[in-house]
Amino acid sequence: MNWRAIKAIVRRDLLAVVRSKGVMLPLILVPIVLMIIMPAAMGRFGPAMTEIPGANVPDVAQLLEIMPESMLAQYERYNTDQLLIIFTLVYMFAPMFLIMPLMVASVVAADSFAGEKERNTLEALIYTPTTDLELFTGKVLSAWVPALLVSLVGFVLYGLTVNISAWPTMQEIFFPNATWLVLVFWVAPGAAGLGLGATVLVSSRVNSFQEANQIAGVVVLPIVILVIAQASGVMYLSLALTVVLGIVIWLIAIALLWVGVRTFRRSEIIARH
Amino acid sequence: MEKPPAIVANGLTRRFGDLTAVDSLDLEVRAGEVLGFLGHNGAGKTTTVRLLNGVLTATAGSARVLGLDPAVDGAELRRRTGVLTETPSVDERLTASENLNIYAELYGVSENTIHKRVAGLLDMFQLADRANDRVSGFSRGMKQRLALARALLHQPELLFLDEPTSGLDPVSTRQVHTLIRELSRNGGHTVFLCTHNLEEAQRLCDRVAVLEQGRVVALGTPTELAHNLGQGVRLELETAPGSVAAALEVLAAFRDARDVSQTDGHPRLTLALPVRDNIPQLVSNLVAADVPLYRITPQEPTLEDVYFALHENKES
Ligand SMILES: Nc1ncnc2c1ncn2[C@@H]1O[C@H](COP(=O)(O)OP(=O)(O)O)[C@@H](O)[C@H]1O
Ligand SMILES: [Mg+2]
Image (cartoon, rainbow over all chains, first blue to last red):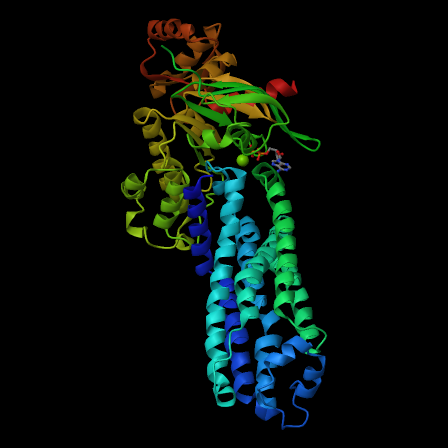
C-alpha cells in the first residue's frame, strides 16, 4: 500500500470539504444543536418543566417502572429531578449522539464519491499511479477521520454542556458513564463506517452530491427509531446492550465496505461515467 | 541502437454494448516522436488513451506501453505516463499550488524536490502570481495550463494530450503549441496528441494516425499522407497584369496542367500538376514564351485535403 498517496487523497478531499459551505454547514450545525443547544436546555430547564402541565417532558415515575433492577440500584440516592436529568441526558440522548458519526461520514463520503463525479475531478485522479484499493482507502479515510474527530469534539462539548447546565440540580459531575465511553470509542467509529459504507454504495449509482446525500440520509433513520424507542421506554441502552449494538453496527459497516471495495474498479467507474 | 517503441497496440478493441469505440487498433508509436491521433468527435481517441493507461479494460487485443501491459501493470505504468485529460479535471476548491502539490505526492515526486518542481511549473505556465488563488476563479485557458503542469509534475517519459487546445483562445493555443514543441525537442518526451484539429496535427506532429470509427485509416508523416493520396501538387504563380493571356496559353499547351484558374482581377493563376517533377518543365516553357514570373509557389497539400480525400475515397 502506497500510504503517501493515500494521505495525499485524504488531504485533497478534506481541503475540498472544508472549502464547501454546502458540506460544512451540516457538519457544524448538527453537532451544535444536538450536543449543545438541546442538552443545555434539558439540563437547565428540564426539572422545572415537569411543573408545567402539557410540557413534553418524560414522566419519571413511568421511566422508573421500566428500568431494569440492576440499573435502578445505582441511582437510589438521587431525587426525582436528578433522576430526570440522568434519564434524559445520560440515556435518552445517547442514541442521538450516534447521528453525528453517521451524518458526518455520510455527508463527506457523498461529497468525495458522488460529488466528485459532478465536479469532473475524478478522471485526473484515476490516471494517478494508485491502485483501486489505494484510491478507495484514501476516500474512505477522508470520510472516516472527520467523522471520528467531530464525534470526539461533540462528546467533549456534550460532557461540558450537561455537567454545567445541570449543575444546579445535580451538584456533582455525573457524566460520562461507562456506557458513553463504549458509545464514543466503540460504537461511533462503527456508525461512521456504516454511514460511509451505505453512502459509497449509493454514490456509485447516482451522479450528484445532493442525490447521494438524500438517499444516504435513510441510514440515519434506524438511529431516530432508536431514540423514539428509548424515549417511549421500550429499551434502555445498558452497558451490555451498547456493546452488542456496537458489534451489530460494526458487522453491517464491514459488510457494506466489503461490497464497496469489491465494486470500486476504476475501469468500471470510468466506463459508467 | 534504436530505442524500443513507446507504444505497441495489437488488435486493441473496446466495445460499449453494441458500439465498438476502438476497433482492432494496430499502432506503433516510436520513442521520442510526437504522434498525432487525429479524428473527429466520437472517433475513439479518449477511449484509446484510457486503454493505453490501464484505466479502462480492453474487450480484446493487447498493448504494451513503455514495455508494460496496461491491463496488468497499470499503476506502475501510470508512474511513467502523464495525461492531460479532455476536460481539465482540476480541483476548483483548491488553489493552483495545492492542486500541484497534492498530485506531486500522488505521483511519488520525492519530498525534497516537490517545492522546486511545483514552483518551476507554475512559473513556466505563467501561473506563479495566481499560485495561491482558488482555481474556481480561473479562466478555461488557465485551468488547461494548470492541468498541463500537473501532467508534467513527475517528468513522464510518455505524455498523452487529449485535445489540449480545444476551447482555448488563440493566444493560449499558441502557448500550448510552443510548449508541446519544446517538450518533444528538448525534453525528449514521447507525445501522443489527440486532436480533431488538422492544422494542429500538421504543425506539431512527426507522424499522424487518422482515426475513424475506432479504426486507423491512414498513418504517416503529414507530408507522406498528403502525397500518398495522389492529389499531385498545386501551384500558384504570379505574372505581370499584361501577361496573363500569354501565361494561360502556355498552360493550355502544357499537357499535364489541370484545374487552371485565375484569381479575379489579379495576375495570379493556380493549377495542379500530377507530380513535382513537372514543375521545371513548366517553368522553362513559361520563360521561353517570355512570360514574366514574379512568383511560383508549390502549395503543399494539407491534412484537410487528406481528410476529405479519405472520405471521398470511401464514398466512391
Ligand atoms: N463509457 C462509455 N459508455 C458508452 N459509450 C462510450 C463510453 N465512452 C465512449 N463511448 C462511445 O465511444 C465512442 C468513442 O468515444 P471517445 O473515445 O470519447 O471518442 P473521442 O475522444 O475521439 O471523441 C463514442 O461513440 C462514444 O459515445
Ligand atoms: Mg475525446
